[in-house]
Amino acid sequence: MQKLIDTIRRREARCGIIGLGYVGLPLALEFARAGLHTVGIDVDPAKVDAITAGRSYITDVHDAEIKEQVDAGRFRATTDFAVIAELDTINICVPTPLRKTKDPDLTYVVAAVNEIRRYLRRGQLVILESTTYPGTTEEVVQPTLESGGLEVGRDFWLAFSPERIDPGNARFNTRNIPKVVGGVTPHCTAVAAALYEQSVETVVPVSSPRVAEMVKLLENTFRSVNIGLVNEVALMCHALGLNVWEVIEAAKTKPFGFMAFYPGPGLGGHCIPIDPFYLSWKAKMNGFEPRFIELAGHINEGMPRFVVEKVTDALNRHRKSVRGARIHVLGVAYKAGVNDVRESPALSVMRILAEKGAELSYSDPYVPAIREDGFELDASPLENGSLGNIDCVVVLTDHREFDYDRVVKTAPLVVDTRNALRGLEGDHIVRL
Ligand SMILES: NC(=O)c1ccc[n+]([C@@H]2O[C@H](COP(=O)([O-])OP(=O)(O)OC[C@H]3O[C@@H](n4cnc5c(N)ncnc54)[C@H](O)[C@@H]3O)[C@@H](O)[C@H]2O)c1
Image 1 (cartoon, rainbow, N blue to C red):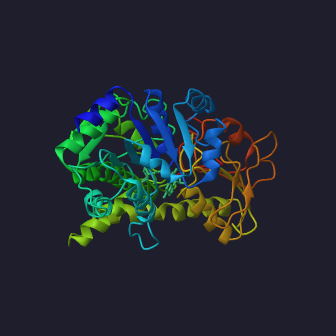
Image 2 (cartoon, rainbow, N blue to C red):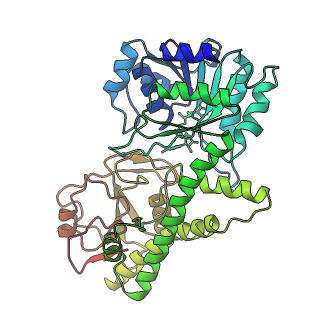
Image 3 (cartoon, protein in one colour):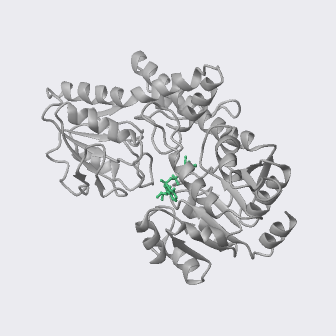
């Protein structure tokens, strides 16, 4: 154990990151910046080619950051898993989606672990970072890695460390977000902590991988449940004729005991709509019926339909039906400032509007085209006069790049689901 810790501290460790997406690429760059020799392994050759060419495919990462590390010889990418044999540490950052039944889909984790198992040798450290249910590291990863005869805590080290990155967040990043680490044995925790200490400001050791897995799910369940609560409050305010945004702004002046969450068209991204169901599934497997998770999921998943109802009512007041209406969507990414449309509620709203016969167009400075969910749409830029022949604009993602003032001046009707039009007035504005 001490040998690997010393190698890491001398910055002589060779580190591998499996999965170079929103989580893996920033982590790999942080390791490389710390002076660790880092290799990224991804099954997607397009990502490997982009990195080799010093090109980023993630909003928060600039081309120059990749190029600097690649040119310095500290970072490279490959599709060849055989490189694992030469590595000292391996971080797994592959997707953990849900199946249609809302059961965990560990296919990507299992595939990555099987590859590691082929090349695993004495003295290596393996860390799972993909969000997953409590028990995955010890019940799924450990048995596979040990099936070749090596033993965890004696021959190799294994830990779980949840990734807490928040894409689009200018203040908190891989470096300054504290890193929770739980190893299968205390030695595993010590080696994993030593690795992160090279590139992350604060490391928080916990007693086991299960605790570390649960920490991440508590954090994201907390968000999902609070967003569910505030979405329900938005529905209540609608019924009571109150402006939910004004209520939240005033409530948040309380200096203790209240934390502001905001309603919207629904949950999106690869975390909040998914992770709580990993916990829910595991709880049910153990005979526990979680209620908050299911209820929040139910309310949050109903928000796109509520938005469509708002659009329908607004058009109705203008003597128009959704069928045939020209509806322009502002923002399709799941949140402001990112190019990620995974699970984006905008796609759900657009799908329902399309099913009702609306003619859809959209603008999004981060998403030039949508080629999923049955859509084949290219973004149209917001130019002077471009909203002239539109019946209704729906703000679904509050990107800062939009000129909301001009939108309000040129569109006949605007439905705002994000309070992007705060401070702007007009009879033709409909707020969530
Ligand atoms: N995106 C976020 O904001 C965020 C934040 C915290 C945690 N997470 C968690 O981190 C994990 C990764 O999420 P992400 O957003 O980076 O996903 P992503 O889809 O952006 O990236 C995953 C990468 O893994 C690659 N991959 C898939 N299978 C592979 C395999 N077998 N071997 C090698 N590469 C493989 C894919 O090609 C892709 O490049 C998930 O568990 C997610 O829940 C994500």
